[in-house]
Structure formats: structure tokens, C-alpha cells
Image 1: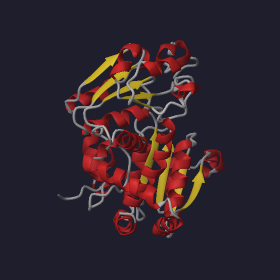
Image 2: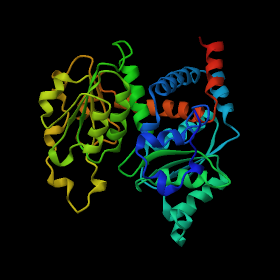
Image 3: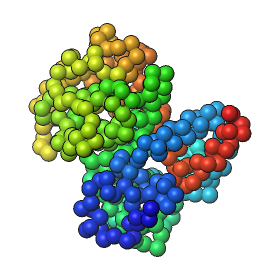
Image 4: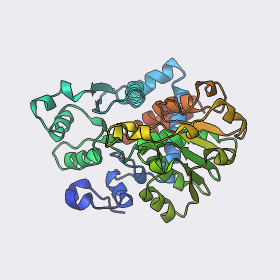
Length: 362
């Protein structure tokens, strides 16, 4: 199939495309991702490959020899971590992933320290970064900005890959990848992700992690999704339209207690009050009945897992942390491994990792 390229389509035409039509523009000719911008660019086979590679990398990294091998793979490359929106977990996991692969990483985490304070546009700032680095990992409050910059750079003499590390309220594809990896590892002894029931709880209207993961779950057969939230924070129709198109079973409801016993995975989220359009907007919504408390551990199945993209507030009691079903700390560590696998794949080093694994660890 002929590769679709961002330098062969006008921006006005590209941004009007539905998400599923945009995915092929972000791929390399061999099917590996070039840019990583939306969940819709990933098919099931690529998800499986990335998860397998992440597991191999974490096993290789257990030895000094293995770490030296990994660190040699991309020691000739440089990465810019452009985080104009606050972050600790996502930033540090990408930074650690770069270190594992030997990439030399630089960062801009506050636009006040850049030439934007002198009036430079965000577009010009990012294009400046592309002059010095081989990849940009971008986290921004501007919806669609990572996608726009991928198109812009693809139409210059120096196109480089962009990874969307969170873009406005729309997408967080690498969070969805680490969530899939966590689900896969958690259910590897109970038939995998297929056939499981996933319960999303909290601020589903403004949580970009839910939007991305909900779509990726459509790649697995017979997964039932529950969206449990107060009406003001309930999932938007565009997400449900994607599930309808994929013929996925889902339920939209407000009764947290009633759904708990049904869930195989409970995905808790915090209130996203940074997106409030007026002061005190989120505080007017009572979310106390959507907190996971210690007593709820007796209401869920013995092999149900509890997830959270973090940071958390009161939505999961600290007393839950020591239960073996609390997966959110391992989920966070999984992010480092899957992002390492993703970057290695983007730069075509996945086959070398596979060969090293077969020779030394198989």
C-alpha cells in the first residue's frame, strides 16, 4: 500500500480528516510509527509488538551488560523534551527512556525561559528545536498543537519525529500504551485483555487518558466498558461514537457502587480542574461518591486491578496502596518501559533488541 505523507497534503485538508484517516500519515514506509500523536494510529499487531519489546527491554536491563547494550543503540541521537504543561511522571519516564537508549536529552519545561518571552511564536520555538535535535517529545495545553507541528516540520527541509506526551484535552497516546501494557501484564495468566470489563471512573469529560485508552481497548475482542461519573463529568459523545462504530459493548452510568463487583479493571481519574472555564466550576460537582475507599476492596473480585494515571487526590485512599490489586505504581513504572520500546521502534532498533534477547536471554 502506498504510504501517505504529511508533506503531500495541505494543513487545511489534513485537519479536517477523521482520526482514523490521519493514522497512516504518521507511519514510516515499513509500518513503524514515525510520529506518535493519536491512539487511532495503532493496530493490534503493533500493540502486541510494543508490549513484547517492552518486556524484553526490561529483562535485558537487569544486567550491566544489557544496560550497556541498550545505551549504545541511540547514543548518536538527541531528544528535546518540550513540556510547556506541568508534568512529573510523563516527563521523567520519557527522560529515563532516553537514558536507557543512550539518547542525549535536553528540556524546556517553562516557556518563560525560552524566546517566547520575547514574543516568539510556539511554532517558531518548536522549529528551532528541530534544528538541534532528532526527536521532540511534546506536552502542551494546546489541543491539536503536536499534530500541527508534525505537519509543519514534515514540510521543512528537516523533518523529525514528534511524540505527543499530552495535547490539550484530546489525546495522550503513550499513556494509553502503558495502560494497555499494564492490562496485558496483569491479565497474562487469566486469558489476556479479551473478554474483560473495564470501568472508567471520575472526570471522563476532560480526561485525555480515558479518551485514548477507550479507543485502544476496541482492538481487543469482547471488552465491555463502563463509564461511571456524575452527569457533569460524563464521557463525551464522540468517544461513544467510536465505540459504536467498533460495535463495542459499553454502559454509561452514575452508580459507582453497583458496577464495582462487575469490573476486572477499575480505572480511577482525578478531577481535571485545570480545564475549568470559570472559577470554582469543578468544586460545584460532588464527586465524593466516586472515591475508591479501603472498604471497597471487599466489593471487588480477588483478581480485579485498580489503575490510575496519577497524580491522585482523594479518589483512591492511601490505605488501598498495599493491596496487591493496586496497580498504579507498577503502571507508572510500565510507562518507562513502553516508552523505551516505542522510541527504539521509531528509530528502527527493535530488531537489534530482539536479536540480542534471543542470543542472550531466550
